[in-house]
Length: 204
Image (cartoon, rainbow, N blue to C red; front, side):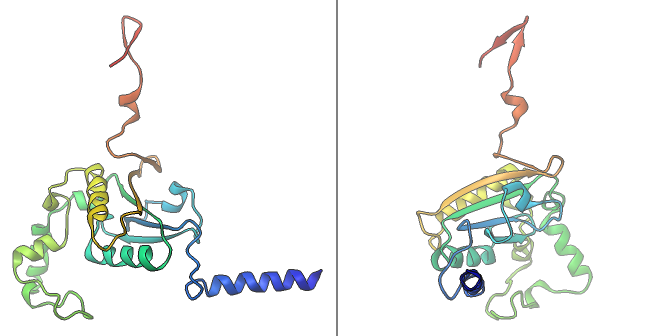
């Protein structure tokens, strides 16, 4: 019946518009942390659609205080059961250090200890130039040398954070901007292929 179809569609639209009110999670119960780089085609890489996940982007795909804020809300109140952390090759966070960026802003007359980082949280201030350098969280300043290490570090931080439920599945991957594909951290296919000696496969 036409009326039944219309009523069904109206119910579907209502559920979609009011899914937060009704406690309906995103389609995959998924929260994704990745970089803001436009070359990271995250939905395509994960094989998901726009309504399937909450996607959080920042410079480097790094677990920052605001990333934790968002992750804690989606996992505790919005029905999310899985977190995926995705870093990527050729990330800009590998190219600079916090000291270089801090000096740039200071050359503009900005004093780190006098700025308000979060206008909605006045108490959140930088107390020293050293803290300002660390606040940018460039890979080198975090003791990280590759997107693989950063993905693993992000997973570890989220797994051990008290605001993230212990039953949440958390996984990390690296997105290759040169192939538009994901791989596991430190897993390179060319290292897994067969090796030959005198025409015979050598197993390691």
